Image (cartoon, rainbow, N blue to C red; front, side, top):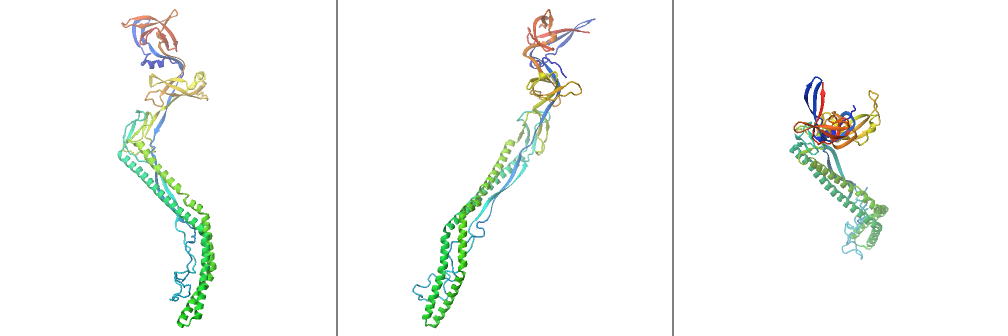
Amino acid sequence: MKKIIAGSAAILLAGGSVLGYNIYNNSSKSNGADIIKEVKVARGNVTSGITESAAVNVESLEQTYDLVLNSTSVSASVEGESSASGGSKSMGGGMSMNGGMSSGGMSSGGMSSGGMSSGGMSSGGKSSGSKSSGSKSGSMGSTSVSTKSESSAVELVVDKVSVTEGQTVKVGDVLMSITPESIDKARSSLTKAVDDAELALRQAQINENETKLSAKFEYDTRIAEGQNALSVYNSSLEEISQNISSLQSQITSLESQIAECKDEKQLSQLKTQLETYQAQLSSAQSSRASEELSAKQTYEEACMYYENAQDLYDVSVNDVGSASEEAEEAVEAARSDLEAFEAYIADGKIYAEFSGTITGVGYSSGDTLSSDVAIASFADAESITVTVNVTEDDIAAVHLDDIVEVSFLSYPDEIYSGYVSTIGSSSTSGNSSTVSYPVTVVVTSFPDTLLSGMTANVTFITKQVKDVLYVSNKAVITEDAESYVLRKKEDGSEEKVKVSAGFSNGNIAEISGVSEGDTLLIKGKVS
């Protein structure tokens, strides 16, 4: 529908129904009755333009319960195994021999005054046994933090709903309150999650420190053993040779004593000891090769661990930092959840996030908030549009961002504003041969109770004079190229006043020579 409108903005500025009038019958005659209409001189804008009508589209907004927090359980542990794979041989002690010489041993001058003990050489002396092959002390491993996260909504129970459908609210208005019991329960749960995460962080830090200390001990041990490996190896070979030499020397000494001994009883003891030493010498000589090989293997292993000490240390502590980082992240997440909760429900109330008319409320007293159900839905005050079809004859007068006037069928006495947001490039013809183009207008001012589907009249302004006096065209009388109006005086009589008429849109006209609020008369006849 296309029409030319006039003075609609002036109605708004004047604050009343400017073009409304009083009608009264002045006389009754056979050729008709005299009709007198009263109109007021008003101040405002005189506008002409192209007007099209269409339904209002009001976007719907939903405020949801989005306090969905991560519930995370955290634990820290040390995982690992013995540091020396297969066990490296100990290099710390000397060789021991079964039944070696006592520290008293034989004197350099031959037999002691007490002679040889019947037990032969005491176990405190050297032994032909092989070196021990025990594992290194200490352990190496890594600290790990185990986390389990679950997203869950904090359960809050509605105490009282403060809004109803159709109510107009602004951002920050109270929508509903929450029961103190449900708030306390949720706060307790979130606080415990923070405490648990902080405890796990401390445990991870302790475990990691222990891992680092153990790894450092292993590193220092490998370095020390590697640095002494050659010396220990040579000492081991020397001990093997000395052991055999010592046995041979003892045997020679016993043989000499036997040759000189005259006492049968003592001679028998010496022969028994000789046999024992000869057996020990035979055993030492037969095991010499294997003992030397064992010493060489121990030397090579010590060298290997020495060369790889840094790499082995790095492996042991490689994951130490990441474990604490994971625990710290869990602490930050738990604290963030608690802070978000406090910010959301600090005073036990939920506030409107949008301005507009409430079109729905999802809860009542006693309900538990859920992310699946909207708290409230709103008619979006920032997304009210009208899309009208403008014919090809008029589309050239429409431009992007043009300011337009908007009136609503449900609110006929007010004029609102908007602007052109889009002009469609595709034409439509409908059931007629007239080609039209869709033009979308964003409405920037509107009544509080505007609803989607209401009829709006959009005027694309082609000419406008602002802040002028205007009156209905029918009140202006033209005689001999002069313009007059009939003004009603305070005593009810009328006077003829000369005026100057300016821009007219066909319904109202700009006027000067009278004052705002003057009552003018329009006379006519009806049959």
